[in-house]
Image (cartoon, rainbow, N blue to C red):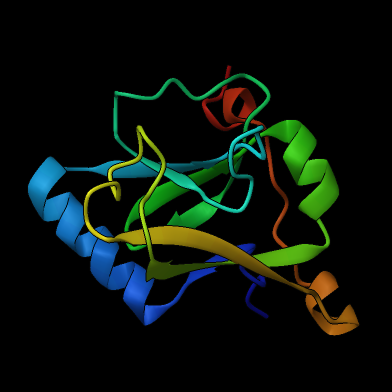
Length: 130
């Protein structure tokens, strides 16, 4: 039985990810839940954002790794994150800024059956094998 993904993306999000990858090369996402806009994941070129020791790797969307801060994961661990795109301006440092579209995180609770199929997550440090 396949594990239930912790993060997925809509067709619109996958299209924008593809556009950003063509312009900027490999990208990654980080969901911080910070003070500015906790519902907007930030998209960065790989190497321009330092993933922290307490960040959790949830999976990949459109070939891009998706990380969430440890404290934010504690709140959202029972939900599947659905990355979508809506009209608007992205975060100041996020690659979607200037595209007149921005990434948006939606979520839904897992069913009991899905909870039994959730893949284990590890902190970024653990996933590197250190």
